[in-house]
Image (cartoon, rainbow, N blue to C red; front, side, top):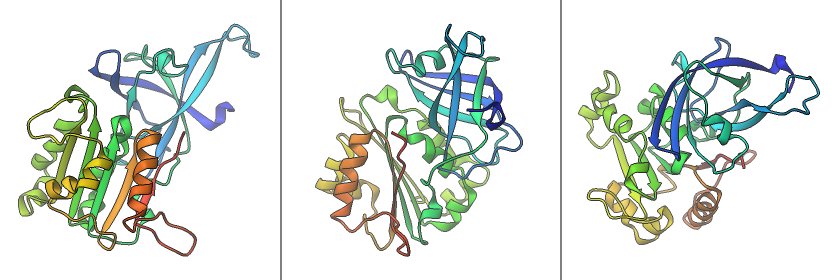
Length: 269
């Protein structure tokens, strides 16, 4: 990618959720970078490459990362898993405050509420780091005005992987969002699901199983209704594929030309 297509940003904050496995980081943000909640950015890290044609001894490796931060934030925030031996995350994990990371000037993706006609219930179904775009969506003022219920489901293997739990639950005390939660205690519904251990208060099982048994709707107190509901999916490819097929059988479909849908999926694999 030519240098005029990206900016060099500085890492300003790093948070480890699970050592050697999950972490988040923030970078500076170029004033010209614009995005819609739910979109992703292409990030670049420099990797040693003695054979690089420019003689610099390094090359830039690029990967897509959903944006956690809100469009009005002055920083950019991202949520990452560490892949053992991964070409990108092995370098990304080494970055600390003050280090440089590259950001494509253009944001990408269609996992946004703009994909839907107006609905009543917004379901955000995620696994692992697939939660990232939904934090940005939850920080969107317009979404809180547009929907009666915001339902966030985050499926992980163990409780320690429930990143951003305090952020989501803390929205009840937010200066703006907190007023809406106070007026409607069921406005924001957060449902963590843990698959490999039993944790009081959390669901147990894969999201597909919880939908098939009806447990997800029971715990949410909201019906997964294609007339009212709009569903966004983000997570590992197997989960997304399984959920797409299951939800299709219940009347959910992605938008097509001339036909607005009620299901949005991001594909960067």
